[in-house]
Length: 284
Image (cartoon, rainbow, N blue to C red; front, top):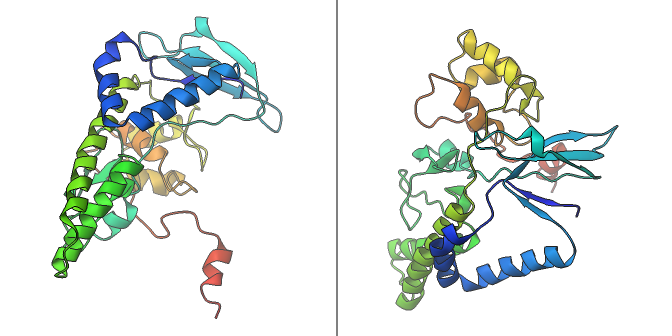
């Protein structure tokens, strides 16, 4: 690895309270993070906090990448550009809950503060649709440990509906774990809060899968396109392998008339599926 680039500022004294909450809520997770960070340093991999990737170049494959520090206005500062020779670049801009199945079933959704949509549900996974429960990141971001706790609580609720009782200590422990890991996750998000970056402009890609530029979307909005469906029909944005997971929030931000949660209409299959996989279902 040549370098690790993180848009959030480096944790420091200002994060002392949240770092303490993380250590108290999930000490093993914090220890894992410390070990990973130490391993990077021991192997001479620099970490650039408060930076973003600004350019990638190469012939037939990526061969170089440029990064820059995020300025006070949220835009990359051209005076701080660094260049690295590379043969691969891995980019991550956060996660989005995979709510397509729940939406297709008619479950109520709301806007997730961290982007995208989340399913409206109780701690036991109960949604607005009777008989449908959603646990884990399929309904809202939280991580594996929150999902595990929700699974136990949901199982207890389902068992109770069927007239079966689960051991009370297990359910009580799961509720305590759920609260504890929610505290950890909330503190983690605050420690690694990313500044709002400028929206892509001009020839910058909004939909990577279908190579739809910001300029193409802006032109449609200016001529009256008022929702995601109209943009999708005109440009194929949202029809690629990622199912609109990257472009949805970017396009919604450009739609001045967008009101409340929307998202592209959920259509099965909700994840990329090959023809071979579909054909194999028909084999005896």
